[in-house]
Image (cartoon, rainbow, N blue to C red; front, side, top):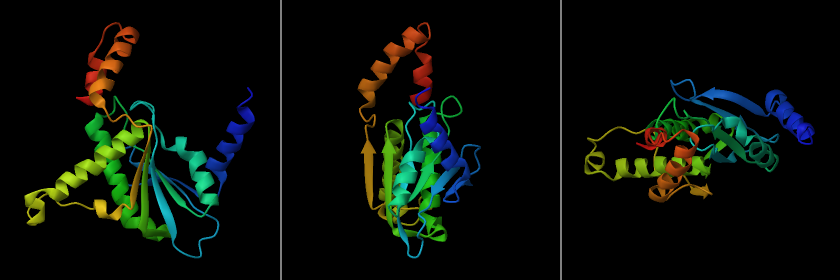
Length: 202
């Protein structure tokens, strides 16, 4: 009850502010959408934060980044909150693919919205930090392959060189230890069904 005034304020901003571009399509999947938060003063190209929210790989949603988007937009930064499939709609591989597509969209299209393509910062929080880091590593592996360097590998639509910095906030990076932890909690909550967590990550 005490949170209601704040939630209403954030909701009004998200749904009615002219500075928010909701559900910009970046891919073919239903969750391939991103929200853009734009500063009022757009007289010059702005730095850009591409943000991937947390949500334990099951409840992440682009609107969770509304407060971050609003505050950074007030300080002259464009924020792109990238949505992606959650489990059970997709596995971790699908999530990484979605986020990679979202990053590609930001890198190749943000100038149309007043962003500076040379100042793109990737930020992930919790599960979003893990997914964003995986997307960067996956892209680096593609770009580092001999086939790619010889022009024979898989074509890519963005490069890690387009990302100025990556910030991972409270991300789950040591998955070997985390999987054991999740297995323990999952077995308690799902009557011993270890397969739930295995399905997310494997």
